[in-house]
Length: 104
Image 1: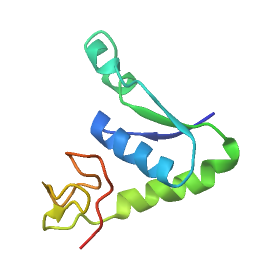
Image 2 (image 1 turned 90 degrees about the vertical axis):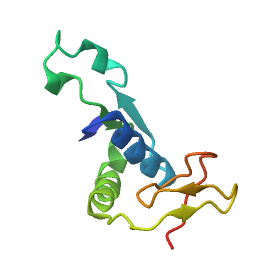
Image 3 (image 1 turned 135 degrees about the horizontal axis):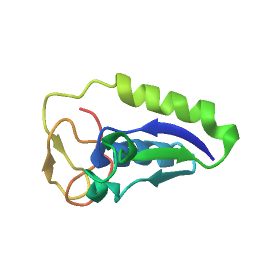
């Protein structure tokens, strides 16, 4: 396994992990529950990290992360085509049913 990404928070880590899964890249999330150790551990040791399982996937995974970092959040809200719920423009998946949201 190779370390790919250190996220600022758990939500960001799950967004990146979801994008990797969509690209067919097997990855693992580490330090998911380490925030509880903050204070006892240095803050840099509790950031969520994403590791790629197969070393052959690392370059493709880096491109996925690069695309995530360069993506512009749409300003308007999204309406889920599966459940009809409205989600904020920055969301990539429906908060209610978990379906991927299509850009307008």
